[in-house]
Image (tube, rainbow, N blue to C red; front, side, top):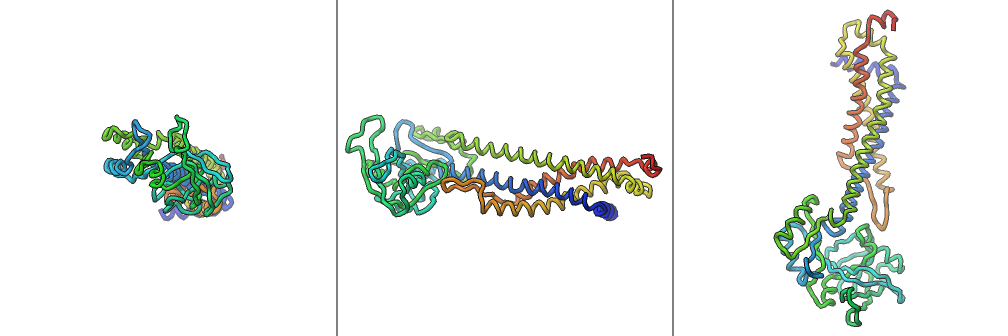
Length: 386
């Protein structure tokens, strides 16, 4: 085996320009796919964080036949017992925010601490009776920042009836934070739930319970079993609640598969051509090796070993290129909006999977060349008949 390895390396070094081209072809495939895999993984993770961690959770629970839970605390404890998850209470009312007599209608969400929102700046802790967090879109519209005052209007009656003066709450609030992200927070306003519920006249009220599970994939089962255990609850898992989110995640998977397919094709074609041409150009050397006693299996092994060496060298160079690309995308994300940034997710699999796929492609491409090497017609070549 040592002799075969020596012969394979010597033959590769005999035509260094060909070796360089082979290594470059593998390196480009690995170097392209590593950051692509990392960016797609980071995109999927960001989508889950925005939609579930900073959104409506894995399962959203609301009353079956009422506008809200009159005792959100008791219902939250019941849901925790049934699911084992973490429950966040939210009270949602219609309203508006604005300054200088100009207002923009927006949902007013009463939240607890810790808040189910991602902040661009400021804090959502201890909002109390006069603190508010507004979405980044509203902050830009009214040119307010953390520490500024903003007017809040809350509609305490249902939208189906004409409100009276008693149904409308008017408050001057201090902006404690700016919310961003894609889960709607960028255009909502957030206040303390206890204060909002007390102002409503239902001190423990909650419109929705957001259930956060340890495993996102358990959401469908939990949503199906909750109403069976308690008929007063309506449970909606995150896939049914927001079809756009699972569709985007599925799209990432499709893009990932297509990307791997393109890399396999882009690597396999030039490698197959270059390796096969190497064999054709070095038929006389192969014939000499066969004449001095090497078997067809040994000629096959020498050629295939060359493919492995090329794959390993190219993968090492490609891994370095991929690492540099990941560092670049960490500094310059592929997507930024409303404080949301999609950055690459670098794990061991981010590097090992592309390397394994491209290395396997290299070996498969080299198999045909190795087969051709093993089929060298020794006598005819040495007699210069071929």
